[in-house]
Image 1 (cartoon, rainbow, N blue to C red):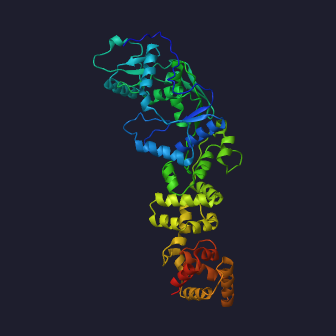
Image 2 (cartoon, rainbow, N blue to C red):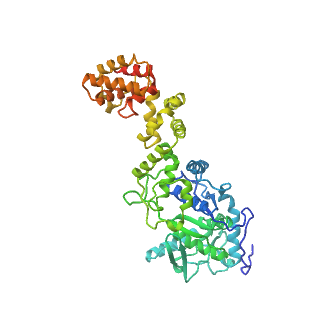
Image 3 (cartoon, one colour):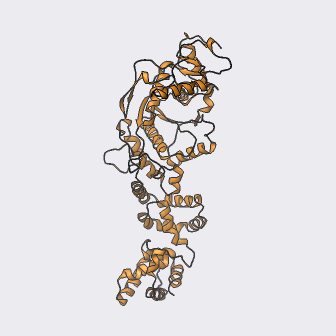
Length: 489
């Protein structure tokens, strides 16, 4: 096929995106695994910035790596975003399905003389890199086909297409986070934009997609800074406007090292299964690299109202599980019991905790009544389930190891006496029960705790629970007395 290298390059639009001047951001994950915590933060920042300016956040699935991209991973990404409440506009866009458009632009660049066919074989490229390495030079393409005529091409070699990087000057990035970043053109080689098999490279596909999607702001990790410099070469060659950028420092662990699984680099689904609330994750992630004064807790509406990429920190944020737990505890305490009950029931089902799922479903009203007393004692939904388990536990209760010490040869007979005393109580309220037990303790010359703590263990199997008299009111008279008698002998 012949191309006129003097033909003008014109910005193209497929018509699938509407011309607009509104702020448009994008989140562009690769579907090769779960939505990890760093990706979730990137999505959150893109979402918040777009919403702040009445714009759109688009979702592009960068699935050009067909060997590693899976439908299951794509669904996991979408599920993670949905659970966090980070909603995108329109349908997810598949990068792979736009391969023809990427090839079209690559050939348009060749026709304009801004890119060229490269017929270097894999063996030639390997030899070139080895020679450069032997000379102590960084491996890079030497431009051997940059100015040669395709008529010199060897037979049987399918060419790749390479962009013509500038040979002199600078590539300047005016970044909202990193400030002015300058790359020497002499350090950029002619990167491949279309492989010899006709598939686009990541660098090229991203530029074409961002242009066609009319993305105005790219918010992503600072590990993409060099990529941005290379992509600007393609933007300039096509005569396209370069989006504004904000390259955010990556998240580090508490020790300052790159975030890893041991630090908490898990997927969104893992945090859900650990009992974290989506609002807590969003609140915590927003403060990893951004802040609004001393505000530690804020709603999504406040985040949108306050968020600006110019306020993002240039230094790396540190992920701290203890702080995340504290934030989650705040949201546990502040949440409506009905919402928390739904979270508990759903999580028990997801974890396949059959007894808990059935117990919660059969005792919804009792659990709801208990939650205001349980919420201040829990930092995760898992802890809430553990605290509520006494409500539907099967007799005789299993006693936690650390609680066994409260059931001794002295306290067990006392439980029988308390049960006998309370059996004659006609009004089964926490207040009436408390009056009787206090009178019993006073008569025995004991502090209330010496009576109440063994009762708590007998009633719940744990050392921590809501007030023991409130527990008995929740359980009802027959169940309470039966549990006391189980441990009385």
